[in-house]
Picture 1 (tube, rainbow, N blue to C red):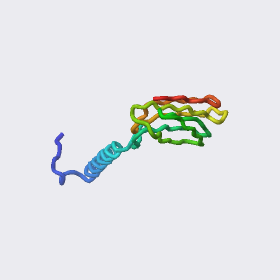
Picture 2: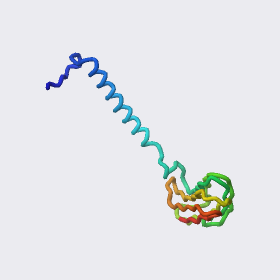
Picture 3: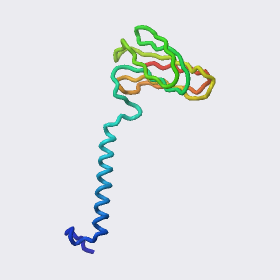
Picture 4: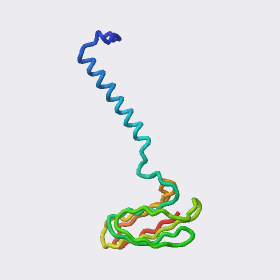
Amino acid sequence: MRFKLDWSEWGTGKKIAVVLVVCCIGCIIIGMIAGVGTPDQNTSNATGTQVKIIYDGSWSGSINNGDGSSTYSGDGNETINVTNSSDYSIVSAAIQKQGGNSRELKVQIIRNGEIKKEQSTTAEYGVVSVSD
């Protein structure tokens, strides 16, 4: 079997197959390059410290930034920027579900876009305590 290097000697079907393969490879490479710049689930573009509450329901609780405690309440997911917190101060959060259901309440402490600590509960009126 002889490999033809001259494009003009190739049949139309073979030319179409080669063009399709090259296009598919190009699309895969572009997709990989585009995916590199996309933050994954564990990171964000934020700087500083945040407490992220992930819950499909009502919640309330407190966040301590090392200088004092503040109370919060909400309904649904929320990301709270923790003020007066250096990269070295301890941040803690205690968040309670306000409903008697088994949906998951998850609380994350995020520093400079990276999840440092994470806890969750599915208990009715459950409390999540997390610190970092």
